[in-house]
Image 1 (cartoon, rainbow, N blue to C red):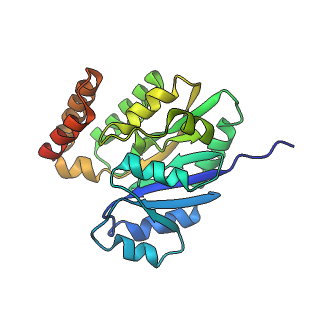
Image 2 (cartoon, one colour):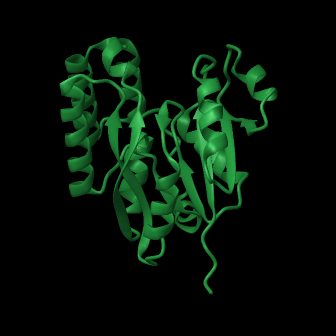
Length: 229
C-alpha cells in the first residue's frame, strides 16, 4: 500500500499577542504531522506566550517570505501547508490536500477563501479572488498555499521580497505542474478591509497588483503600501 503523504503546517507571526491564544487552540486541533510557528521579531508578548505553549516555534529574519522559508527548513513532511495567523482552516481541508496530492501531476494548490465579516462586498471580493485564482492559477497567502516539498525546494522557496512573495511563488510553481484549486473554504479575517475601508483597500490592492504586473519592484510597492496604511 502506498504511504500517505505527511503534512507540515508553517505559520508566520509578528506581534500577534492578541490573536495568539485562538491561533494556538486552532493549531492544536489540526491533524497535521508537524506544526511550526515562525516569529519575525515580535516586540509585544508574542514570544513569551509561545515559550509557554507546547507548539514548536522558531525565530527568523523579519518578512513573511523569510519566515515561511525558515519554517519549511526545519520540517520534514512531504507537503508544506502555509497558514496566515488570521486565517482559519479546518480538519477536512487536510483530507482534501491528501486527496489532491494523490495525483502525481499536482505540485501545489490552494483553497477557496471567505472573509469573516458579513458585509456583502466581502462576499463579492472573495468570489473575485477565487475566480481569478482559478483562471490564472495565481494565488495569495490568505488562501493557504500547499506545495510538495520537492517542488518548494526546486523553486528556491518564497522569493525574499517584502510584498507579493505569494504571487511570485505561485507564478513559478505553475510552470512545474498542476495547481489544485480546491473548493473547500478557509476563513480569513476581514479586519484589514474593515479597518482601512473596504473600497479603499480594494483600490489599493488592484493598484499594487497592476504595478507589479508592469514590473515595479516589490520593494517600491512595499513602501507605497506602508505609506497608504
